[in-house]
Amino acid sequence: MPVHADDVPQAAAADPSPPPGLVVTGRYDQRPGYGVNRPRGSASWLFTFTLGGGGLLRQGAARTRAGAGDLVVLAPGTGHRYAVAPGAESWRFWWTHCQARPAWTHWLAPYAVSDGLYAVTSVPGALHGRIEAAFARMLADARGPAEDPPPEPDPVAVAHGSLARELALCALEEVVLLAAAGARTPAPAPDADARVRRAEELIAADPGAPHTVRSLAEGVALSPSRFAHLFTLRTGRSPMRALREARLRHAARLLEVTDLTVERVAAACGFSSPFHFSRVFRERYGVPPGAYRAGARR
Image (tube, rainbow, N blue to C red; front, side, top):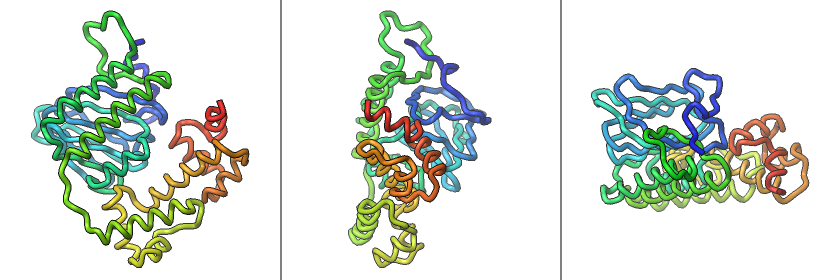
């Protein structure tokens, strides 16, 4: 069934973004004057792939300019803005709002501009056609099967139903993998990577422990400031963002395989308040913990 832009649920904000849990994709051709400003960020990830012209994207204090063939990604939770780049006559681009699969941040990490902003700006031209085709499949799958496509199809579609969502995410995974694997990045320093991996192992071994930037830095023999810089540079996420994601993944597993109450799951995963836990869990997975458990059991 075709889904139009007006069908996308809107949050109460000047420049809203789709609620978490939805997969929304589209293709835009915008002129100078177009821009979006979200001071509080978005609850979902935003993936953009520029076809022509130029865009300027900001996440916090960091910024990057997107040209033809560039994949730029904004993570949720930090204020961002994007617009047609100064001096550009237009900005033609594909975009998708969704919840990123965990593996994607590792593929994008070498292209981190800052905590939550990734710019893959050296994608070989030979891959552009495959990436565009993957976005086009997302749009078609979201609209659903139709014998006769409309003469002027809406440039935005929402993937309704688990099949449409999974097909869309599979296509987007192809985009991320093609772009990240095809682009060229400088070789990382082996010693820095080893210390970052060790910190990730400390987090994964016990996500519910009272980790701090200082305690993790001491665990890998670095100063807190140096550790935070290296961790963000190598993974594309700050240590505390990585810790929160690990705690939420651990919480999801406990909800799936145990009968612990939501309060005990929150405590086991390092959340001091069950109310805070429920709020951030819903932001990440689109449903509160109890509903997530019920869906997993079904």
